[in-house]
Image (cartoon, rainbow, N blue to C red; front, side, top):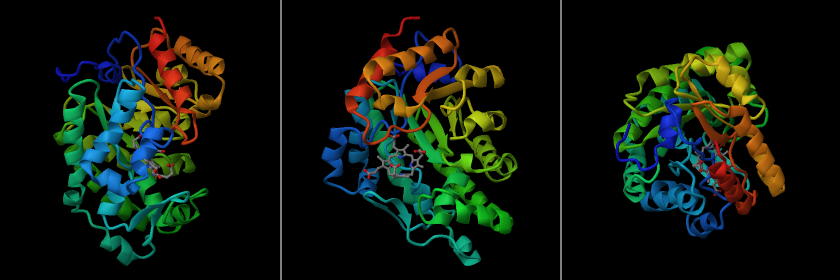
Length: 345
Ligand code: CP3
C-alpha cells in the first residue's frame, strides 16, 4: 500500500482490510451536476478537457475540494481508447458520443490500430499532474472501458438503446467480434499498465452495457476479455474494481476474473452479493442514483438502510449503482457524502 496516502480508506476497503468507516466516492462525481464543471466546460470541448492535463486535473479535483469524497477519479472517458485505435470520436451536446466511422466491414476491423499507446500519453501526463495536486490527500482511481462496452460504441457509432447492430454482429459474425474484442483488450492492457506506471492508486474497468447480454454471451464476449485484461495487469498493490450494470446477475462470473472489488448495481442486495463472492473479494455500491433526486430525509434513510445492512463487513466501498445524472442537485450529493461520513459504527 502507498505509504504516502493520508486517506487510504478506499485502498484498505478494496483489499478487504478493516476501516474506521466505508469510503465514499461516486461514479460521474466529476461532472455536469456541478456549476464549477460548467464554468470550465463552457470554455472548452469535452475532448479538449480530457486531453489537456491541467484542465483534466482541475476537474478531477472538484469533487475532492467541494464534496470531500474519499477518492478522486481521473477526468477522462472510456472512449478515448477507441479514439486512439482510429475511431473518429466527437461528443455532441445533448446527443452524447458519436463515431463518424462505425465498424461495418472486415477492412474496418483490420484498420483498428493496436499500437496506439503514444496517442494516449496525455492520460499519463494528466495522472502525474493530478497526483502532484492531490499530494496524497486521497487515492486516485484510473479507469478504462471494457472491450464489449467499447465494441458496442464502435459498432453502433454511438450510444444505443437496444444494441441491435452489436448483437447482430455477435450472432452472425462472432469471429469478427472476437477479432475486435481481442484488439481492444490488448490496447486496454497497455493503457491500464501505463496508468499504473504513471501513478494511479486503484483502477476501475467499466463494462457499462454488459447487462444487454445473455448469460452465455456475457461469458463469451465480455468476461473472457475482462479476465484476460485483469490477468495481464502489473497490479502490484493497485486494487482493481470491476463494474458492470448487470452485476446483480453476473457477479459470480465477474468474480472469476479475480478483481479485488465487484461494483454492484442497485437491483441486488449488496450483502447477499458479497456473501456469494469468494472470501476477501470486496463490493462497491449500490445506491440507486435516483435516490439523490429525493428529499433529504429519504436520502438519509436509504443510505442508513444500506449501511446498517453492511454493518460489520470489511470490504465495502460506498458508491452509486451507476453514475450521477447531470440534473441531480449538487446540494443533495453533498448531503449524501455528509450522511455517510457521519455514520457511526
Ligand atoms: O466519473 C467521473 O466523474 C470521471 C470521468 C468519466 C466520464 N465518463 C466523464 C464524462 C468517466 C469515468 C466516464 C466513463 C464513461 N463514459 C462510461 C462508463 C460509466 C457509465 O456511465 O456507464 C461511459 C458509458 C461513457 C461514455 C460516455 N461519455 C457517454 C455515454 C457520454 C454522454 C452522455 C453521458 O452519459 O454523460 C459521455 C460524455 C461524458 N463523459 C461527460 C463526462 C463529464 C459529459 C461531457 C459533457 O460535458 O457534455
